[in-house]
Amino acid sequence: MSPYRFTSVLVAVDGSDGSRHALDCALSLCVLMDVPLTALAVEGKLPAYAGSTGEVDEVKRERDTYFRGVLASARDAAQASGVDVSTDLVPGHAAEVITHYARAHGHDLIVIGHRGHFLGDYLLGSTADRVAHHAHCPVMVVR
Image 1 (tube, rainbow, N blue to C red):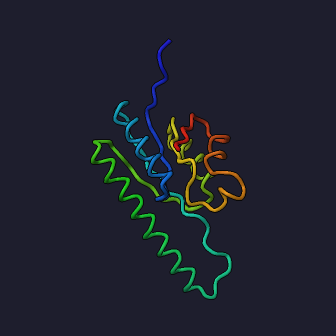
Image 2 (image 1 turned 120 degrees about the vertical axis):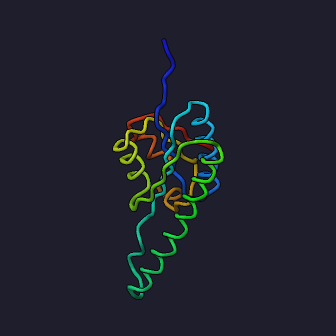
Image 3 (image 1 turned 45 degrees about the horizontal axis):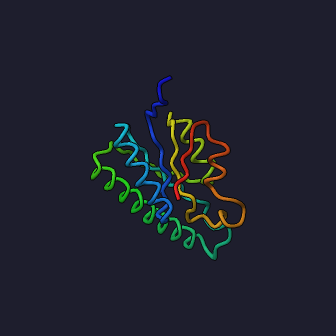
């Protein structure tokens, strides 16, 4: 029986310690298996109640800037490791976006940190738990 061969790895990144550990693990796997990596950041919903449209626009700009920085760091780390990397920033609910994105783009391994920045992780169960439950492929949860 031959071992399973992964061909495309997706790592979820949000700038938290957990996602940095997940990125490090995903990069190590990609180097060992000589496969490409996609770093995916998910931008949650904007505030439902704001004093003005300007406030919502400002929050959007701040989030975009933050996540562009997170993805640039992931890209730099991948390039330093010699890993072919692509990055993407997608709005929506983290677990839903990660699982749908992995399926739609043909990823056969998802790597995700045990805990991230999502407040809902503490209140409703972790994003990692939901991804593991709904993903079409293996999910590696990194502590």
